[in-house]
Length: 148
Image 1 (cartoon, one colour):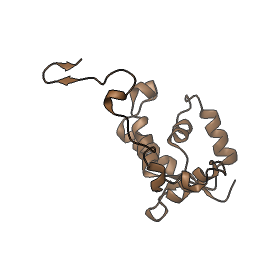
Image 2 (cartoon, helix red, strand yellow):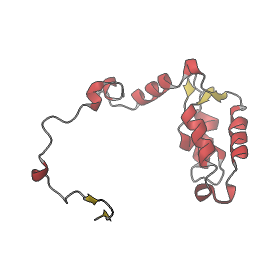
Image 3 (spheres, rainbow, N blue to C red):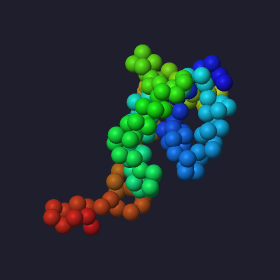
């Protein structure tokens, strides 16, 4: 086990919680052999897990009601080393550490930082004039007639 905290993706939590999930065995292997001593839920993964296990189209006969889903989250958070990320440890630093490990060295850390304004800059050059665009024309909306 490593000495840092893990912030697993929602899909990992779902696979751990649902034995019929196609990646359940991989998730269990991660949990038993690779997980850090501290494993955190963030708000998104906690609420996402509760939401997903309440979806009959996803869960089939294993679907849970809201109280059961909340109980599942609670029972997972009672496992040794598992907890909700506290406000002073909101997961952003863990996200940054995790994402920076996956970026090739030639791209640099700025490429992964969503706070970097250059990452969100529009492509260079002006947008093409509508008359010069290629592809099908945009749909026109006419009041009372729907899309056509």
